[in-house]
Image 1 (tube, rainbow, N blue to C red):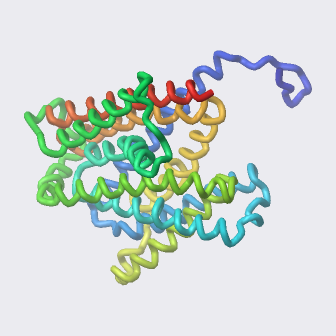
Image 2 (cartoon, helix red, strand yellow):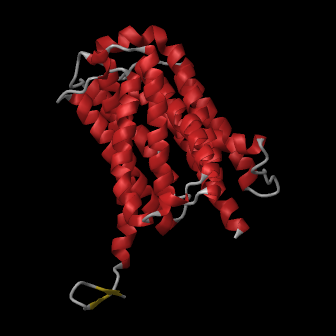
Image 3 (cartoon, rainbow, N blue to C red):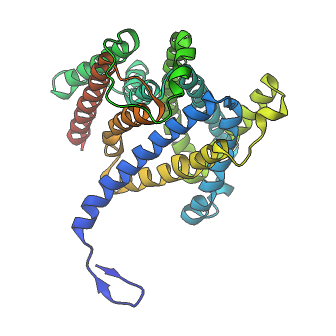
Length: 341
């Protein structure tokens, strides 16, 4: 029972709770899709990657600050030297490095191709957890072998997307026809983009391992996330100034570049983080990743309609394998969690 503003007792509607969680997770995947598509456009039109990441970090921290103040009050005072070291390390390995690598890989490939690498991060995290003995395979259970099958399926799907194109499927005409010319220009850098995206996914996976340590020394997620954004943005700004001191590269006007930066901070950082945190509290940590394959579907379809990204037989088969592998992995992981309770 809840009490409303007038003091009247009201009963919670379980039906409302059932649809709110899926809607929130679909919104998260739409936020992610919009981020990738907008970033692809502005980077393709010459926006300096380090400037984009720097401004995104600043806006992300600005939108996270009210959440930190409301939810965690003055807990920033508890950031000691030990917590600061881990936050700085996390900002470098888990924020500045993977985001900059991802945007550069996105520039060399397509949005529908780059989004796949974000979806294999849970599987890479699992492999690293095995290497560092943070997780063990239980071959006596059904979940153990299924995890191996899921990893092989997702890796195989990624390789299929990379090395096999097949027939192009011309399902519709893109709205922004000129983007097809940009695709031709970056085709020669596809291998470089793949390497950068793979390195980014590896760094993101390392972030999950480091984040667990950060949570132990400083358990306040909003303040630590805001601090990570600020420190990671500062690192990116320093690197960007060394690489490119042209002032024009750092200018923001009233254009799509500014929209992308504000969108990144408001929806793709603060909004996404808040909805994920709410879903974890309501449904558990395994719930949000179940919806991550939707971002692949959204990006493939919208990238083709809006930007002219090619849909090929190879990309469809590979994407299906990645999504299937991810779902099998999440199912096996949920069985493991249930067995440990």
